Every structure is written in C-alpha cells, then in structure tokens.
Image (cartoon, rainbow, N blue to C red; front, side, top):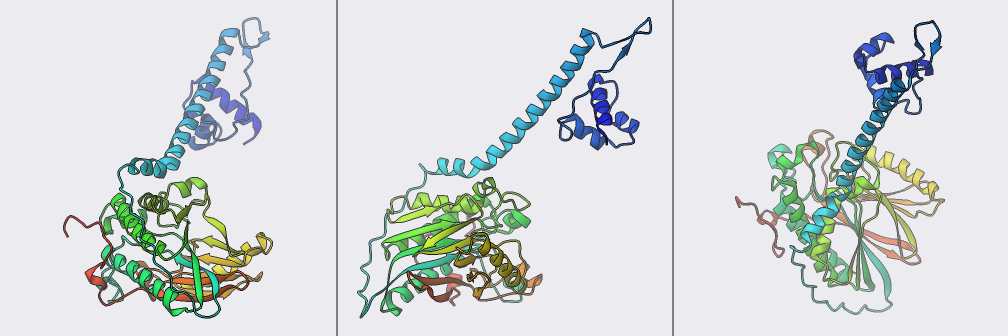
Length: 423
C-alpha cells in the first residue's frame, strides 16, 4: 500500500461517510487493514491530506474553516481512541505486574511467621578442615500435581502429601550427608538455587487435576511446605541464601514471555514470596528474586548461570540442545560463566560445554507424569542435586539425593501441611 492510498483512506475515515468494509472495497482490501489504519496500529505517522473542494465558479478552493474543523475533530477523535487503547493496555500490564505483590501485601498481616529453628551445633571436623559452600538445586517440585499409577503403568503415585514426605526426605538426606558423612568438610553457608516449576500451574488445565483443585490454595500450601523445609535447614548453617528463578509452569500467560512483567506475575514467584513471609523472623535466611528469567550467581568466586531451561523436550534432545545453549551463553559473558545450572529436564547430570563451563541439570520430585511417560517415554529417579563449591577448586563433588521412600503414601511425618476438606 503506497503513501497516497494511506492518506486517502485516512481522509475517508475522517469523512465518516463510508464503513471500513466499503473503504476497503475501494482499494481491493479487506476490513482488517482499514481497521489497523483507523486505530493507528499501522501508518500512524501518515497524516491525511485535506481534499480540495470545488465551488461554483470553477475555481478550486481549500476546505472552508468549518470543514477543516470537522477534519481536525476527526483526528482528535482518533488520538482520543488511541489514548484510551494505550490506557487499557497499561492498566492490563500494571495488573500483571502487581498481581504477586498485591497478593503478598494482603497476606503479610494474615500469615503468622514461623519461629526461628533452634541452632544445631555442628560437629567439629576431624583433621584438616575443608571449607565449602553447600548448594542445593531445588526445582520441578510440581507439588500440587496428582499422578495416579494407572495413568503411568505403575511408575508413579504422586500427590501433595507424597510430595511433602519427599521434601522431608530431601532435608534428612542432605543433613545426613553434609553433617555426618563428609567428616572433614565444613559448610557454613547454604545456597538454594530455586529453579522454578514449584507448581504445575494453570497451563494445560492442570488446576482442575491438582490436589486442591484451586491454584491459590495450591500456592499457599506449597509456600507453607517450602517454609518448613528452609526453616529446618537454616538451623544447620550460618547463612541460607535462596535465589528463586521462575519456570514455565507457573506463568500466567498461554505463551512463554521473557520480560520482568512475566517474572513478576508468576506462581513460582508468589509461592517463594509467601514462603518469605513465613520466614521473616529467621534472620539467617535471605531471599533473592532476579528480575529476569535467568541470573548469574557468584559462589566462592565462581559464576553460576541459573535458568529454568524451558523450551526443550525430552532429556536426550534436551541435553543436546541445552549443551548448545550453554555453549552460546558462555561466550556472550566473555567466558565469565563457570557453571550453567538448569531445572526442567527432570533428569540429573552434568556435561562439559564449549567455553570451559560445565552444565549441571537437576532432577524432579516425581518419577514421571502423564505427559513425560505417555508422550516422550521418559521416567527416572525422583531426586534433587546437591554439590559443594570450593574457593579454589569450584564444584568438587555432586550427589543426586533420591527422594522416594516406602512410607511416603502416609504423608509427611513432621511437617504441618494444609489438608483438603474431604481428607
């Protein structure tokens, strides 16, 4: 469409004598392009040209003042409509940004914070002490998801009560390994890499199949569970830092978005911020909420790139594609990335990538679900990865903690959790 046609179309719109469909027919167009011009979605910078008016006597005269005023009023109406459209868009965007903070603000005076856990005296290390920071990769909890055995040929039987017990096992095994098994190691600080998908969220109809059947209740219950996990761990470390990245399941939009607004309006963020309310009296616990879908976290002088890792399918394909992605990210940071950490795979492991970095992938809290088993033929151990970071040597050891136990169907043994009305 050339400039002259656009000017003519705008003049027709200002004249208001023809419908948009009729204007479109004059130029062999459908109504859509005319509507885009009318609402200034396209060709906003093009101004209509006032038409020359023929009057008796045959002399061309410019539009009289009254007609020009009519044209200007038409332009003013277009500007007014554009302004109203922008106001609606801004209002919608502000709602998305404020959704989490608004809920947190309302909940703050209602939730009674937990008392700090009594500090546990750490056993003195034998011989030469090796000081390291302990890291827990914490992701893909899907704590509100329900998976029945008949849906996955008996490979999983999962719900919120089972998830709560597996969270207890995670704490038990982490403390047993770091406080007792590694005799010469001392861990004063714990960094928890929250890598998202704490809930199965609203996408793909998960809420209707979730444990509580209501997303807000799911969020409250998961946050309460997380708070008890972090509180218990905090008794064994001088510092606990929790860095929370959002995943793809917690999003409030159908499509994955990449702005800070998408991060702010995410159930993963809401869950962690509610957990933060529960733990506001625990002074040695600090939360970090990056504004983007990824962040670089420095630990003992080593740089860790944290990202949920969504956008991939299948662990075999995922590892290949994620390796290429990590190999791209490292050069972008001029080689300053030492480790590339991701959730999403539901498969623990590590692999070297180009640029000298190592990619670390986390497991999940469930063996499989209906999608992973029926669609991509995958199932694995329910596990979470822990590792130690040394100031000189970087990541020195790794351990995937297996979470499933024979007694888990009975639910949690020491954590208090929300129950359904029918339980």
